[in-house]
Amino acid sequence: MASSSKRTHAGKSGQPPRKPNQPYSNLFLTERNETHFESISSRKFILERRVELEENEAPEFQAELHRRRWDKLGSYPLLANIAVVKEFCANALRLEEGIAPFTSYVRGVRVPYDARTINQFLGTELRADEVFENGNYTIDTMDPVVVEAAICMPGHGFHRNRSQQPLHVKRRDLLPVVRIWSALVHANILPCSHVSDLYWTRSMLMYCIMTQRTMDLGDIICMEISGCANSTPGSALGHPSLITQLCQLAGVDVHSPPFEGPGRAIDSRYISAYCQDCAQPAVPAPEPIHAVAPQEDVPMDDAAAPGPPLTILQRFDALEGRPETFMQRHEGQMESLHRGQMFILDAFRSFSLHSAPGYQFPTTADYHAYTSWPGDQAPFFGGGGAAADATEEDGVPAVDDDDQAP
Image (tube, rainbow, N blue to C red):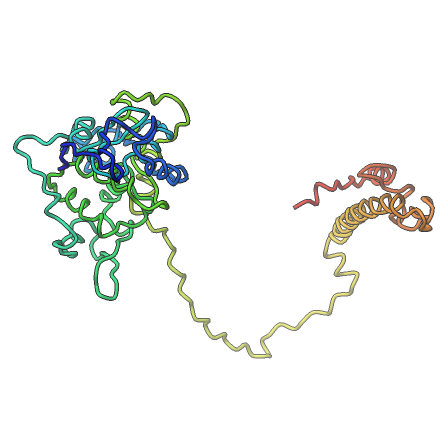
């Protein structure tokens, strides 16, 4: 638990220490905080999630959420003020003595984010008879097999390195209720952008949740906020909505844009998509391969004598007019192809007449006489004209280019 005692602020050599109520500027505690703000400005946020479930949805998850009195953990996320959060994180960087731990500074206002403040906001204060137990379970003391039994599907567990040290477990290998908790934990408690795996270091918290150990939620979150503010420049920032509301409680104006979030809610659709085992598609059993029965030999004497071969005319008569239908269809297709080709050639010819005036082109009449469809009375232009009219008069409907489109 962090102490709220104030210590003297170390100033430059030969100067008296600066008091915490004398900041470097109206926005930053120190010059280094101002420099840190530049790296903060380009970092992304991990947005919190709201829990939006009906009473009969995910009952096991909701029962544990109510038992722990963590209901507000899933209901507080609102829009986050991006500028306020970045300024908060820049001033939460602890560099010198005299700055109270778990305290930031936003626009001239001191903003505490210690465990007590966060627990009061979330309504998760421990009762007098409760002692938090999460500190007793660490990666150095826990047996991976015990953790796997509490959070993993039967027969699944952590991926390990060559030394057999646990690394992470895939989300699909977690129990369905643990997958729901993982979505909430990775957004609202221990923010992490990589949610398809649960890392060994974060599995301690999941083990405590599944085994109903008492936890100090405010202590966990305030340590995480401090860690994010003091992390490397490439890391994402977490708890933007919580920080915005803590700043508002301290008296900071948070109503000016830009705003962002919250993230995708944990609702029935999210649970169906990411937290439940997908039923394997039913694959029909392959049909058995039946052996071909040996054919009975028919004596040549009993076989029917073949009839006389059909003539070409008899074969055509047997088709009952189908050749005419086939030829009409084939002719229509060929005419449609011809129209498309003519459209392209006309476009190239028109373009060439202007781009190469010195070239001797055939006259329009000679050009159309050479390229016209056999039997046409006039050339084809853009889907209409006398050629199409003549075709329709003969009883064959004109074929439109769109009918040939895929």
